[in-house]
Amino acid sequence: MKVAIVGAGPAGLYLAILLKGNDPSHPVTVYERNRVEDTFGFGVVFSDETLENVGEADPETNAAMAAAAARWEDIEIHYRGTVMRSTGHRFSGVERRTLLELLARRAQTLGVEVHWQREVRDLSDCDLPAADLIVAADGAASVIRHRLSEEFQPHLDWRRNRFVWLGSTRPFPAFTFYFKPSPAGLWRTHAYQYAPGRSTFIVEAREETWQASGLDENDEQATVAYLEHLFEDELQGHPLQANRSIWRRFPTVRNARWHSDKVVLLGDAAHTAHFSV
Image (cartoon, rainbow, N blue to C red; front, top):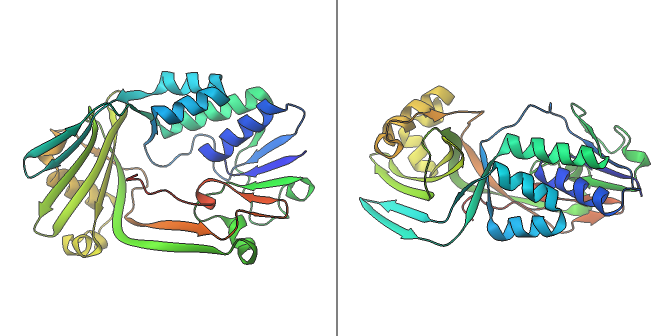
């Protein structure tokens, strides 16, 4: 069976690993529009249960992820000077770039062909017509899903809150949530460490708060400056870092079907999970 996977994100690459590892005789090819060194965002979180499932399916990938991970067990919620702490949860954070590199390396070691800078705009592109199975792992804004919208019947529910994905050099010791009042309104953060001295710092606010802050008219640098000042105490002197850090609304993606003929949806193309869960 010849398999073509569109999208070299975690879902597409990990599926390629599992398919090739299960039966090396099947040709598996991954097409990715970006370069191998391109990645957006900062860290990715996994529960220990998730990593255990990875370990059962592919011990080599699990070992590589574990070696690259920062670990913690606590969840902390900060509000008006009060800290609520819950322990025993066991999470791991991995840098997104590192995760993609190790998944791509593992896939290629198994014999998967990964083609970078190969954008798929239609089912006739690349070698897709010759594939027995086409996997659309090309994200929440999936081109493949759009081409077959009548078959998949996607529904995108754009949530009202605004959020921005940032990084920080502060090594947060727990999964940390701040609720920060300001004259513009209430801000929420989701922060966690994914490598020594590197953390993800997501900021979320209602549309009204975002507009009242003036950030709806500002650029990436202005966002960083505003939030560094707002969260000065929480950051403890550490800076925020941007990487295509634009304010967005979260799309809840649902589809009536996840497969049509020889095309299957995977990952965010099939469904999205909010970063708070």
